[in-house]
Image (cartoon, rainbow, N blue to C red; front, side):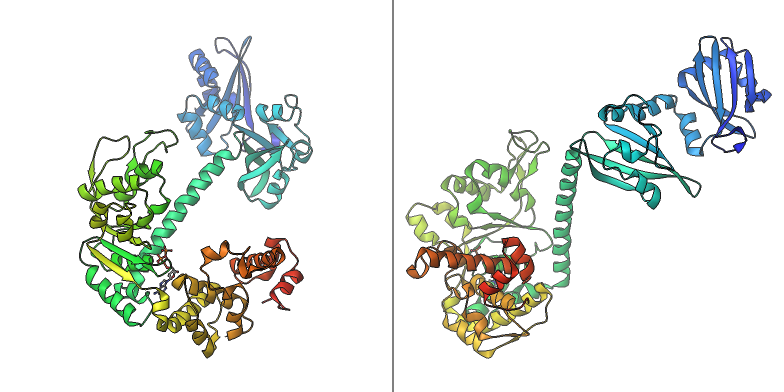
Length: 553
Ligand SMILES: Nc1ncnc2c1ncn2[C@@H]1O[C@H](COP(=O)(O)OP(=O)(O)OP(=O)(O)O)[C@@H](O)[C@H]1O
């Protein structure tokens, strides 16, 4: 910058003193007698030389002095403060110089500065080393020639900061941020910062944030649902007008407000979880949580920590902060023990204790805590038979079943099928963002004649398959008659039945499996056959051929 340029941030003056502070040379702003008076104090000089940057404040002007010793005395460069914040920083922080020094030399956070022409103006020593440059070696070169995959030249053009991006340099990923630097309205350069610890830390942080966001979403949506739907809606969600279903809703209405344990029994897919939800929502605990525990999925080794929680650092592999167990989470609310019939005997014993005492103690903790929960359990097993076979503890059975609710299988209430069909079609239309299609009359008839070992869940799957593959705006009987959707075995059984279905050859079994995979993929991608074909790694035409359709839906 030239002496005449008058730029505010430029050097305003120079002063050279001897070791005692006697002025040897003064030029520019340093000729001001007030500045000379300040600087000629040898104590001030000594202190300033330690700090390197010092504010020089006059009544009508403010400067920053850069003070450096040289063998015969001191050199003081006087400049205008680039901004008030900078001046304040220098004024308030005695070790301002050391901070700048740290920023420039931080081994974990390097810096690249380019000028308005995208030429390197500065590069941190750690970054120079990383690129194998001599000190100052990159300065003056176009940034793109020095830094791999840089976008700093684009930052100058767009004027938009890019924060937390991943940039590959010399075969490793680094997290970088790029900022345009403005003087007034003009972009005068750009600064790039590199976190030398790599992106792993950020990834871990991002994962944590996304977990938390997920949890918040669940809470929000639960809160919304509870607000939007009055308690009656939770009963209305249990579709069916058969005598059995009407009586079921009556029982729920009566039992829900009583705070006693309930055991819900019914085959898989009959809606046990729906009933548990309704019981909770119609109880006085509805504003608290219903915490679901899949009892079958609990390994004995983890059951205590899952159910009762653990204190910080209580065992290897535990979260450092400790964890609240399911029973504590359900305090004042409901705990729903699903699949309780599949609980191993050792786990049953541990469970019995907390059901008797209503007290939990975290693993590694010494403060037993009283918990207040409503117990709701469910099973598709014949628990009485299990008790006889000594697979289930009698005392636990009594604890969990003062009241039982039996949900009959769908085959015993086929008159509910038309209502369920309409309900699922409307629900699927909303889920897939389509108009509700017309449903051919014969379909309900056809479905009522079939057997439903997988109960309502299986019915929903069958309707979903037909819905996804239907052409046009009408659901036709033929949509339900062909393809894997017509299989009457429950899904879990079907998965293992490919090789034996129809007792045919291996080729038949493979074709069967292929068709299943294709149908599953189309459902997974909500009817988008292009995406399904991509996912399966087959051409679209092959997929159409297998589905027996000619066009994309
Ligand atoms: N009466 C019903 N009305 C509406 N939807 C139902 C009904 N019964 C079951 N469903 C639906 O069927 C599916 C299975 O229900 P749910 O998970 O409650 O069954 P479950 O008996 O708990 O099964 P499992 O024993 O396998 O855990 C869910 O999508 C549920 O919404």
